[in-house]
Image (cartoon, rainbow, N blue to C red; front, side, top):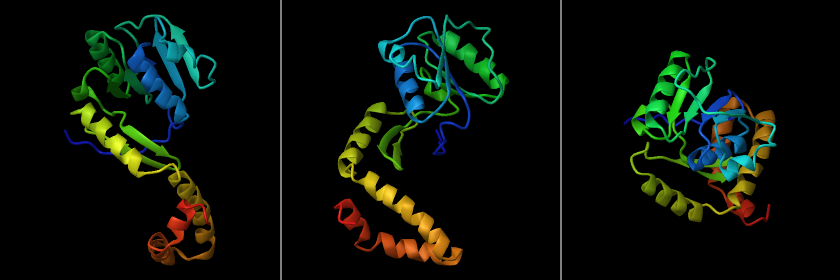
Length: 196
């Protein structure tokens, strides 16, 4: 399956998450960390979801989803129930409303997926096999996490601050050359070593 890796700002569009189990809990935690507003529909809540009930980004409807469920146009819909036929019908309903759909139980019926993420904010690295091998995705993520120490957060934050200064002081045509020289200099290593 051909995938197009994109980075989506979590707070741009709301999400509807249908399901209250462990899989839904993992998706919910990812969405809330990204700043997404989430409307969750489930008859019962996994402990990790219940622990998030006071989060202002989360609205919970404690009820079972029905095959007649409707969705607002343009939302992202994550289907994480343990009922494949319900998920299939909800996916149809959501697409008819103009929504993007992620079915956690069927990798072939997805408009988007959740990749594994190495978070060294503002540096984010995502790893995906488009659902073909979650074990391989986890393996590669673990290898990359070991390769990218936490100090890359500092390097990313420093580069972000420097970017503002570079924009003010250099013309657009000069910026790419500056960044090539900077990234290949000792400066990043000094930042990583906390000697900036």
